[in-house]
Amino acid sequence: MEMSGSREVPADVETTWRALNDPEVLKACIPGCETIERVSDNEFRVTMTSRVGPVSARFNGRIVLSDVVAQKSYTLTFDGQGGAAGFAKGETRVTLVAQDSNTRIEYTAKAQVGGKLAQIGSRLVDGAAAKVADDFFARFVEHVAAARGIEIPPPPAKAYPFIGSMPVRLGLAAAILVAMLLYWWLQR
Image (cartoon, helix red, strand yellow):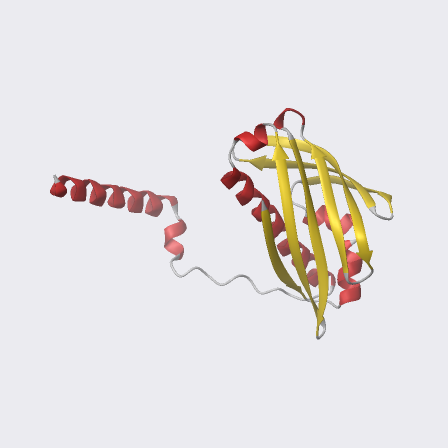
């Protein structure tokens, strides 16, 4: 699985770089992260819990930074064991680009899973990985903004917010089912 994306951070490159290398900031921003401990300048020990479809696992692993160009880029490699659930490993290339007083983080990530995680299907795994990445960068931007006293506006409201309620969704599903059955019956 491979994905890429970018995020705008409301801070200069130096502040963004420092935050990306701070274990406490990473712990606060990585979804499901229980502990993160710096082992050396370029290595962290991590414990995190993750759920992909029906499989939930607690991963013990490590993050290693390589190809480090201070305040510009690095490659982050993750390797974790989740016991009976299997393993996860991946690599993310992170690049920081100055944009006026802000920073754009560009990233490309590759991930691989094995064991039970690999058996549940690549669509679920890809979706879960994309969600973790998106959640991490959203939390990271919020964290940096809050530390600088900047308020991030909430995401725009959905055009049809009433669709989010359970009774409305069930009603819509029933109406669609009835329409499909009626169409099938008329085609006979």
